[in-house]
Image (cartoon, rainbow, N blue to C red; front, side, top):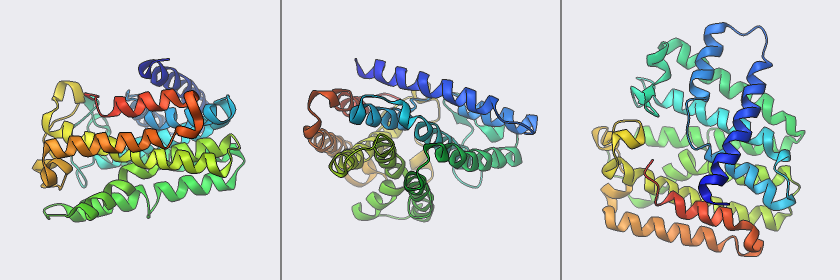
Length: 287
């Protein structure tokens, strides 16, 4: 299975489950449900669900145990994008080539759509029956994870950050959900401690490679490919890898992170080839 086929298959599984989950909701304001669906089904790679489902499949041969994890993480990721795009944060008008949620609806509805997605994500995560998994997801999404990383990011605007500060932002803001996708997916499949640890290390390096590539694409990508304006980091005076070390060194660091991610998979043998291919894909992508 190629990387593209892997991502497509996992995305289809996740989308079908999310469609069914949203259809089960009752007594929800129609405008709110419409805004949630607008953002949740706006496209995207579904990377975090793919990692969760792939981790479970790698551990036990069956992805189904991790389906609640996959759906919960995509809901959390989508909520974070809705809120990041708001005027008080990044003030973006486009997301994946479409008007952002607050532009398609209004700011109040966008805020509530994000609130609803975050809250109902934990309703979905509880379907695993594991408080340990729910805690893992909460900590990755919370104040010491994604939310904390966003705060560090906001505080870093207009400042010259060093490498340690930049990595702290990205480990929390981007890396935490990538890492927990692998950890929680593996835990849902009753992985051993050694398996969870190996996938955690893979996720840490994968998240770094993903973020460095995002920074690079904000410089050299195209609006048509990315579905949003390029140069937004520079316009907000954000510290990025290219700004800190240049494009060539940024590319080298991304390649180094991918090599470390692949090395972490050694104990899984050829069964982990889709994850190896995914790591290589993330630094050659154009979107």
